[in-house]
Image 1: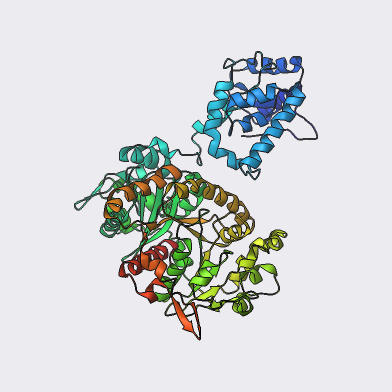
Image 2: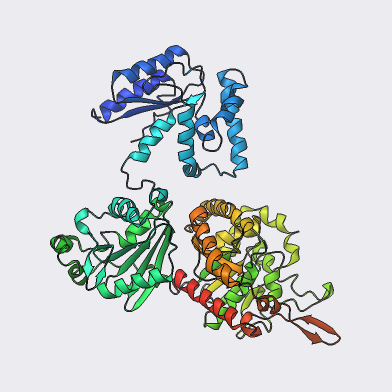
Amino acid sequence: MHKKPEAQQYHSAPKHLIEFSRQCTQEMQLQNYDEIWIVFDTDTWPKESLNNLQQWQQESANHYLAYSNPCFELWLLLHFEDYQAIKSQIESVGNDRKRSKKCKSLLDELSKKNQLSGNYVEYLYYTEEAIARARELDSFCANGIVGFSENITTTLYRLVEKFFTLPQKNAIFDPEICRNEKEVETKFIASYLLPRLDYQASDWVQQPAFNRLRLDFLAHQLVIEAKKPSQHLDNDHVKQLTRYLQETKARYGLLTNAKELRIYEQINADIRLVFRCFVKGIENNMFDLKKLIGKRVLSQNKAQDKTQDNVQHNPVEIIQQVEPEIINYSSQESSNMKIIGVYHNKGGVGKTTVSVNLAAALRNMGKRVLLIDIDAQANATFATGLIKFLFDEDDDLVDRNVFNLLEEAENGFIPDIRHSSVNFNAPEIDVIASHITLIDKQSRITAFLHTRFRLHKKLQLVKDQYDIVIIDAPPSRDIYAEITLITADYLIIPSDLKPFANQGLPNVRHFIRQIDETRMSIGKGALQIIGVLPSKISSNAQYLRHTFQKQRQHIVDKYHFPVMESRIIDRKSLSDCFNQDIENGELRIPDPKSIFMFGGSIESCEEFNMLAKEVLLKIGV
């Protein structure tokens, strides 16, 4: 338990901390096995006061000190910088008061450099590095604080390590501890996941046999299939899990390699993906997981208690007898409009090609689609046939484009702004055009915070008119990219899987984390990442057979992004379909086509059809 003294009665002087700890011991009836930690900064406190803290520590074996010299900011600095560099900079200034100010200024510089928002949750990703650096910096014995007033150090890592080893419900899981399938089963599923979903050892069976099948785990209406971490979860694994669900008649199937976790739901003969997340950071998704496949949801209170003894003899009998409390997210949202952002901060990865042809594929499947071009380059606007003019005076988009949606709350609504694509696809799609003037008008958008939410609000007014909205975002981190990620429900990240595109992925990840904080403020959950989509991929057979598979796995292993099953090969027809033109009097004007309308490549058409099907599956439509 964390307890802080009330400001009116106590402050941070050592004698008050000691007095407060003794008060807590009495009021909370602490036992000998309870640990009491005092966390403090040395600041400018005299040695006598600090010696009193040392005496308090020696009073009992369960008294502990965690301190920083000169201040707490030193511990935060160690999350990002090597201790030797920090130590030398702090020592370069004079007394303790100046050293504290130096720590705070260094932290301000690092926060700007790493684009931190000030939320301490951001530091969790670097806590292990901070512990290692603080341990090296700490030159004191485990139970004493001798010489701490002369040395720059922090022992906060000792307290933090305690939290890492406590059996907490929401303890952080490190996927790197799983090296093979057996360790995925024992370390992740049996030791971490199932206990946090409130399953006891008697609630599940490992390696149960059913007919000629042998499952990895069976818990009530949940089949769990584990794969080794080096394996990318692919269609063959999904087919295997589907077979298990159909044979056992279980409601849910969980598929994981300790890097990614997926949950599939069986409704009649239909198997649907209903949940997906990374295992790294899974503690943040535990509440949603419990609502979906937790023991309470998949059992009937006392009825389940009576059938637990039968699990080892006939686990399938439980599946047949117990009807769970069903929480079907996909059916609850099936009538809702889904908004998909297409974004990468690296240009030239096929982002617009993906956006417009995915929109066409979905429209061909009967979905009501709106394509929004929010990139000032206006490539999606051109690709959908809206730029039929060659001279400025003929520009019919300058006063009817996406900026008009963002500029004012009272004017510029989607029915007034949207266009229909021109000879682009059959059937055509609705488009919100972009314009080169977005660049000059950016300052008018950034001036007011609420403009970031305006696209989201205006889309809600037409949510009954569209099944799917696709937003083609700019390859940057400007206000228009920010608006895309705030507005979208899901994100596709096109990538050619080459080094420069890969090296941009950590920036994408950090950008998403920052945007998620803003999303929470308007009642939207975290942005759901559909995955990295391999696009502009070479058609070379040897490359596809060997290098491509390694590149896919590299994204999962190093950058911890899911990779989509679909792929878009870089074929000449994909550029040719955008470069069509037609005669208009004495002029030739642009007449771009979707890959389906152009008809230059059956293979490309099939790839975009497969992409559309995968997207529909993953967003629950």
